[in-house]
Length: 160
Image 1 (cartoon, rainbow, N blue to C red):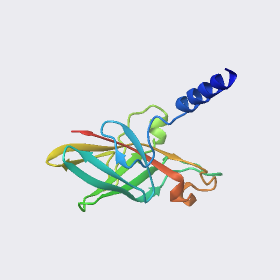
Image 2 (cartoon, helix red, strand yellow; image 1 turned 135 degrees about the vertical axis):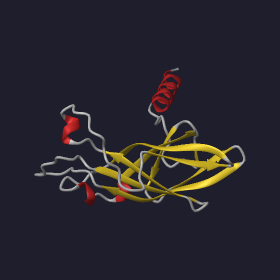
Image 3 (cartoon, rainbow, N blue to C red; image 1 turned 90 degrees about the vertical axis):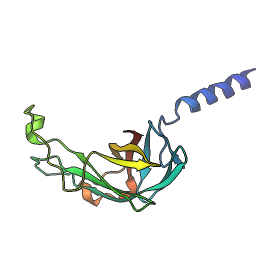
Image 4 (cartoon, rainbow, N blue to C red; image 1 turned 180 degrees about the vertical axis):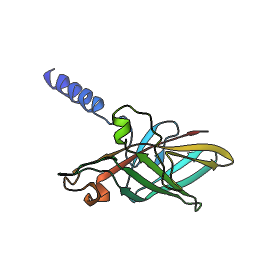
């Protein structure tokens, strides 16, 4: 009887510790966030359309590191490729010094980059949004020296 209780306990613990969202899933869930690693691919399947989505480029321009004084927190730039030759450029902004002191200031975007992009899949409009970026073992001297493979880009695809 003790063994059954232990097995049930282990199943409950493993079920509760599962990640809420997938990292580099085989098929990207519509309306749910999913993580994508550098150079990983996933498929977007909506209705009869299925396209491959790849995280092809990544740049961490955040002002993170030892002995650095920042006025601008910096940005993260992501380039995604769909297998239909569509290039999607997304940007996640860091706050400015003014924003950190509660003054409303618009954040300039790099040309061609935005927080979300509109695409059509099977003639249906969708939005791909950059939700957040996670990093493991961030280089403490300068974020830009952290290997791209250490990053997970969290995206969300939904009808737009």
